[in-house]
Length: 303
Image (cartoon, rainbow, N blue to C red):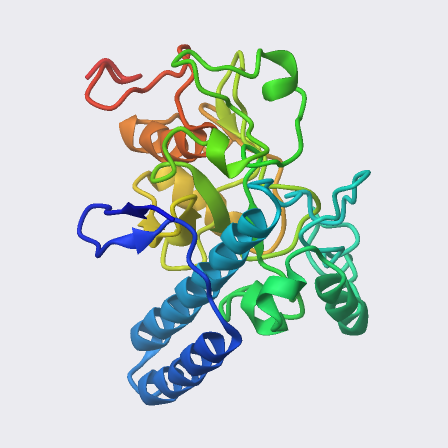
């Protein structure tokens, strides 16, 4: 088991083993934290919820790593509700019907069935607690608010790895099925706190004639979200672009139609492109050559 050090962090084992006692202790600490901060206003409550969300995502990521450790480095099937031959989905169905409309008219999936969907999922043996699957700031009535990214054994979609060779321009795999296939675990995204439940994995375009958001930017945490990486570390990521946050707030409770520069939300500046680049590069482990924005390079507005 190797060790990695990421910026401003203590060393982490690449495959941390998280036990039930650790989870219980962390949960009790978070309950106490919420109680202590409950009286300090909206800002304090949001920070407390964000900390709980980060702890939950950290435990989910530990379960994801433990699953690979126990299965010859094979990654769990990231397609929520989509069992495959020999690959049980990490979690079953928990989304509303339909999932791309507000409730009502959409109808929440019954809690009893959501619990069964969690317990029948492939990660349940490594988690053991239903509360780990949802953020306390997520949509009320949905017990799974995190999603796994397309690039780590998620759904191969048209416009992503199905229409492009699975080896990217830097020679590493775009969509991986084993942990050992990940070239740079510290930059490869695994979980994202989406804020609500959707089928399958978090969708991100790879090759596109007009780059944009397939699944939208989650903004429930004060204009940002919680994400984890394949080396096990978890962080809060705050979006920079005005349009990014505007769209995310508009569709905070259900999946929107997608976002592209110049649509009804307006043209993008460098900040919006940087936001999309974070998810694009994190999902696939590298950036497509046609992507309009590169770190330190030319920007879409010519700056």
